[in-house]
Length: 360
Ligand SMILES: [Zn+2]
Image (cartoon, rainbow, N blue to C red):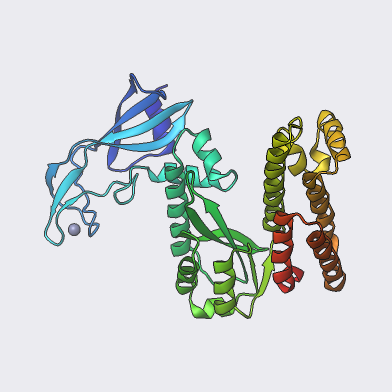
């Protein structure tokens, strides 16, 4: 059987045929190039108006990335025809495997964005040996397709999240629909500023915003500000994952500081390798790690005390009644404020400030 046969099963085009399939030499990842040709006597379609027009000339060959197979990257190689259209002028033809000026085929876009629902974007990029940007671009295209083809009525709950770009302090803001019957990514915005989220609400529209009942987000100030202003009627929930992240970060900071101090005083560096022990949940520790943790706990160090405070805070999530949860929160904050551990105090202060939101 030939590769062409498989391709024709996976994706068959009415007016194009697959030509030769070549193994490209000298690439870091094994690569296949599949030639595409217009079917004999077929007329190109103008990408501007969608009508069949007569050909004008051909532009140079271009590569379009397709779904990888058997560890090989797969590219379509095609020299697009240009049409002479009375309405649109000289235009490149429409190619059914790709939209606009993109280099990724539609099939590959759906493939990547499908995996991006199950794995982190970084993991998808690594698994399929592509770049983070390609994954991002695919998700963005899938999201905009979804917006055009699925209604936005009946959205009652949204979640707002931020993710960091691969390198540096650049962020994206993601807004999800999180209703029990429908979970999907609704919107992606660059950065995580007030303006970013305002952009979402502007796109989402006043009427739909009024119908929101629940909003879930991080304690990031610009988000809080915008949500309060734009969707004050919705119940705003600060989510557990984000809060625990703040605590973990505080512990990290305490530990780093303390390690430095101990080193200066000439103590053995017991904390340098303990980072993961302190951040892991106890039930996830291996036996060996557990022994080390209990050794570590014998020292009355600030890191350890922070760790215990964090563990204690886990109880907060078990309260059903807001009244008792509130009591617990107040007690925990007071205790933490008395601990004299600055980074932990910072978290406690933050939690105090957002008490009503937390109790939601
Ligand atoms: Zn046209």
